[in-house]
Length: 251
Image (cartoon, rainbow, N blue to C red; front, top):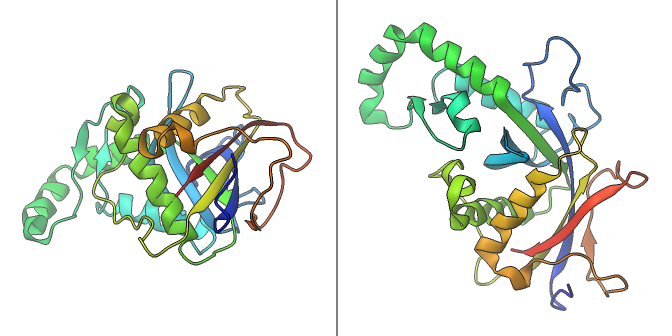
């Protein structure tokens, strides 16, 4: 797909799936903390396994190392700030709330009492949920507004699709999509060979992209196409690895 002359190309190379940082204790799964990507910044996805792939619960961005950002997320779960879902239900594509989270100040007093009463139940649900999450990361240079627009394109795409793909994603995020004064950005997403040999997660993501942006904005690479200036990821670990998916969306 040819980008408009004024567009900037951003290449995201997705790495994963990783277990949620801090939940691996038997070393049978590779960890984000122990990988070469833990010290990178960029875009990330929280997912759960679903049928032949992964459903995206949330996209996020960080200009700090991934390992530091996820420590903050873990702390917010353990202190009751984040909404906690039943892990088994989420893997079936359903949002069943175990704990609503301390999101609204006017409810804080009542929720504080509830949290104390249900403490063991909530902590158990948090552990199960974090153990169910699978994380994908795309290391990238922190170019102004690129992270924000990519995050918004992913989430708005998920909301527009329908079915489990739209049911699972987080709601009420402070998204910052493209402003009217901004030139388009063409994001090329690349997924390496998944350890499980199940590329279904990328198909879920592509379906979301089509839902939000229209199928005309989604296409596999055209060999020999002239490309605009590219903002590449900080590292290129997939350069010598087989790539099984390559597609572009505009945001």
